[in-house]
Length: 621
Image 1 (cartoon, rainbow, N blue to C red):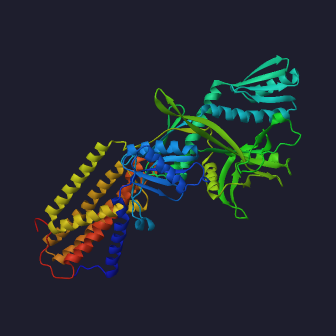
Image 2 (cartoon, rainbow, N blue to C red):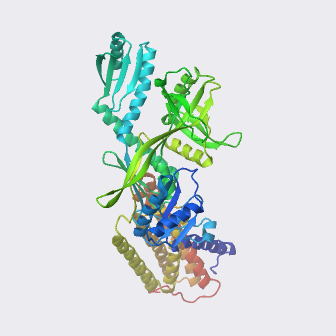
Image 3 (spheres, rainbow, N blue to C red):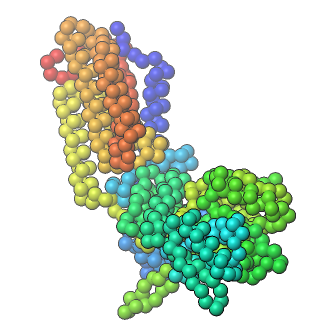
């Protein structure tokens, strides 16, 4: 009997090994520490002049760098270590100001020819590689203020529906509301109405020379409820935004009463992540004020588009971006960028109720951003960075209502396709319930400590070396073949994880070690079966063929049951458990390929097609 694979099977194995070698190769090129600069908005250009300003800032602070380049929409500077990276970020941020986002990053060094075919290095989790750490703070006072603004609109609508005459509803800086009435009778009816409709209000009355008033404050329990909702909603929104960015195995969790911790391992565009995560962009839909409207009920806003005069809008808000259930960026019939909006049922009803009585009037889309200005002050001889929050509200669209609007419409007047895509992402991910600001940003080292990781890797290397020596000593030439297949298995495993953009964590390394053991176990079963067939008197060629055929069912059953467990772990697990399940699943598939097909191909190459009197397969034969 001759042991030979058909030509197509040999070619298939060679092709798989060649592809695996190519896609595993990028992992030989470690990333560089880098500082990345992008525009605070998608319309802010990043060109050679910006790059020169970055270089001058680094040279002024005597910070060494070995590479400065322009990428798609960013400027990237490569540095020697994390300490230089932190110093460089502070210097560049101060030089460029608030119009640019200066972020920490890890820049790939993969050769261009590998990048062109889609080959990139395997991502490492925070516990192995470290990553970018953000600490963000939620503005709780603004959360309460925004909810009170909604109450103002609701109270006005309620009083008008009950035909109770009032002069104005005022939102005070101390977090209270005042309602001024024409007479005490209307005030008393309104007080009874508000107590019946809003059990979260503490309502008191007041009379003075200016008229009859109701003073409204929120209960402490309601304030805490609003604050808890704000932090929970912001957590959900930030998680959604991280998912939209496609970051693998991120950490997003609450810290304390009003802070959120975000850790992003292996992000490729930290500046974009920082811009998306920190942007508290929202929309307000308001009607344009009538010419004869009292000035106390209107507000003037500028357009984002330069050169257009400001417009007066009603203070009453129709809906906000929180009513948006879906948003998609596309282009209108003239090729201009737009965002197609779908509202939830309540938002659609509100929009329809207002616009059906406002046909031929103009409705504005107000774009709201919570930003910070950075100021530097010297305190006790030490320069400190002070962030001053502010709100920017500008009109992006002011269009005539041709017919009553419903749950679907579109927003135009955006500054380019980049801005439409970003706005759609922010609205789709969900509106932030309150402004959120960066308190801290830093690169973090491996969470387990570099020494522990080095010890773990060393133990893996020692264990692998002992396995290789055992196989070589116990199975001789066949042990050498198994060791070659085992090395190929590791390369294929790394290649597949790189192709799938899977993230390797320390539990993932445990999964790799387990697959190494399973791959060796498969070869032990095959070789032991061959030895048994030789003892039973079969000739070497027949023993090889019988050994691989008879051991296959046992190997297949054992690996399939383990694969099912790995799939279940991936389905129900989170974080590190998923990392273990991913590497274990991939390792099982690659180990079966190498332990059965690759070793058989090598054995066929060495022993197939010729007469063999004796096999070098270890002791006892």
